[in-house]
Every structure is written in structure tokens, then in C-alpha cells.
Length: 457
Image (cartoon, rainbow, N blue to C red):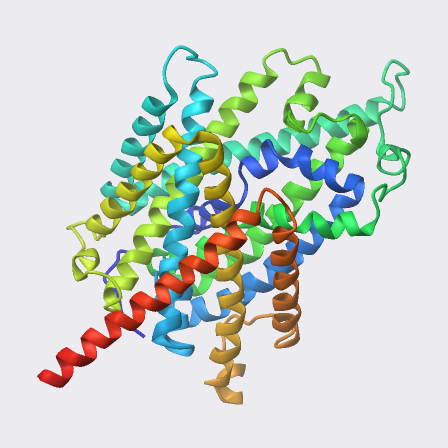
């Protein structure tokens, strides 16, 4: 496994918040109303199922990351334990994921700023945000970690506030008759717990899984985390628990406050909740939180995509200039190249705002599901390289191996099928395989050129 010269300046709190920041975003704050409408209160079961899948994936990734703590993470592991070709496809696909995701998020950030500055074009704010976040990523990885920590902390505080306030309102309802239609009974008193049937619970798995994508970015911090043997296990265990609590806890409270069939799928359920307590500035507060969520995702995306380019360059799968580090051990060219393509995405979204936005998001989601599958398969192959004594000495292990891996892969296949049946994700299901074919062709061409040069020498 290749060694790296990246500085280990990311603390445990940084690593945890990077993963939280990547996986809790507009999917919860804005679009969870739509998932509630898909399946009713039973959507909580879908979140539990996706949470379990994510836990299995993260434990599998953590087992390899603790053994080999490098920033290339799943791309480097695929290169080592599957094949160089799969490492190539995995690395470029993850870069593709974040490049597309940041295109969408940075464009959304510009629109959120128009809430306060309606007379300014959104592209100015999108461009300004991208420049600022690029500068942050070029300075020092510790500064990046601090920025991401505070971005993510804003989201965490907002979610905790909603849960506490919501539970307080539910408790007050027992003693104040002025509150109507409030309580846990809302989870089953409006058509039942699963009013649209269990098939709707399964159908919702696609968009919900998409909202969890980003949590695997914790693997890319391995090469720059302090004491990774302790930091990574702690971060993985805590992040998964927190993410599940935040998603499930907040939606449980929201659906207890409001009958699910009376919620507006176009409005944030967080705005509805804060409106409930008479907070007149609820829309402005949530707009600020969603803005920080978008910027957090962009910040994580620039970090993750640049580290992946750095790894690809170290594997001779990308121009070697992308491997170069500056005096602060930042892969400066990798950062600049990633942000350049993200800038092209802003231009694309400027000219084709609606169609391009949906295509970009769906393609990123399918790419993320592909990466999850690669992680599970790679860890199976990783275990086959170890004897029983080496397995016993592993400092961090996956759970229920290998059965959990096979079940996880089957569920990921189900998620792809459900995405194909969903109008919002169908474009990604079509586009991503085309991307993989392009990668396979370019890898074959690159390998042929290298073999020819080697033969001539």
C-alpha cells in the first residue's frame, strides 16, 4: 500500500463532523417532507433500514481504514484488493460524485442567498462561495477541519433544538387543550402507520439512501487524521448513531406535531415546526441553516475530490502534477482542478437550471451507491488476504462478516431498482453506467500506452 506525506492535523472532532456534514444536508432540512408524503409515518422504517445498511458499510470501510490509514481510502483498497482497473473506476467515480454534488450544492447556495438579497443574481453568490471554499481548502487542512466542524455544528444544534422543542410541545399538549392534533398518536391515527402500504416504504428507499451519501467521506480523512487507530473507530461508531438519531428523531417529532397527510411537500418541515411555536423568523433561520448545509457539503466535496485526485495521481491513474503537495502538505493542483470542474458546473446550471440540477443530483446519488457496493466487495476480498491469526489481530472489525456484506449488496441492488422507478433519479441510473463505460475505455487506452512504453524501454 502506497505511503503518503499528508499531514495528520485532523482531530477526532473534525473527522466526526466531516462525516456528519457530508451526510446531513438539504435532504433532511428541505426534502424530508417529500419522503414523508411517499410512505407516511412508516417512512421511519425506511430510515432505520438505510441506517443499518450505512452502518454495515462504514464498519467494513473502517476495518480497512484502520489497518491502512491512507487518504485514498476505498479507491486505494479497490486498487490493492480487487484490481488496478477497479481502483481507477472507483477513484474517478468518487471524484465524479463530489464534482457533481458540489455543482448542485454551490448553485443552491446562490439561490439561498437570494432570500436576503433578491435583486442580486444567484451566480454571483455561487461563484463567491466556491472561491472562498477553495481558498480555505488551499490554506491548511486544520483550518478546513475547523470550518467544517462549525458548519456541521450549526446543523446539529438546529436538529437538537427541533427535537427538544417538539417534545416540549407534545408534553404541554397533555395539559393544554388549546393544542389540537398533537401527539404520538399522529403516527397511526391518519390512515394507519403505513397508510400507503409497505411497498411505499420500499419505494422511498432510493431518495432516503441518497440523503445518507457522504458519510463514507470519513474514510478519506484517514491519511490526515491524528492517531487514526483510535480516531476512526470512535468517529465511525459515533457518527452512525448520531446520523440515525438526527434523521429518525427529528422526523418522529415532526410527524407527531403534524399529521403526515397535512404537510406541504414543498415546505421544510423544520420551518413548520418553528412556526408552530410562533417563531416569526423561522423561514429565515432555516434558510441560514440550509445555506450552511450546502456550504458544508461543498467544503467536504472539495476536500474529498481533491484527495481522491491525489490518490489517483499516486497510482499513475491521473497526471502526476495532481500528486504534488505544497509546503503545508495540501495537494494544491488537485484542489484547483476539482474546483475548476465545479465552476463549469455552475455555468451549466446557470444556463439549464432545472434539468441540469436534477440530472446532476441523481447522477451523484447513483455514483454514491456504486461506491458503497465497492466498499462491501473490497472488504470481502481484503479478508481473503488474511489468515485467522491476522483477522483476530484486527483492531477494528466489520460486523456479521460476510453475511452482512451480502445482505448489504442485495439491498443496494434494490435501491438502484427503486431509483430506476423514480422519475427524479432515473436520469442518474442511465447516466452513471455510461460514465463507467467511458472510464473502462480510458483505462484500457491508458494501460495499452503504458505497456507499449514499457515494452519499448
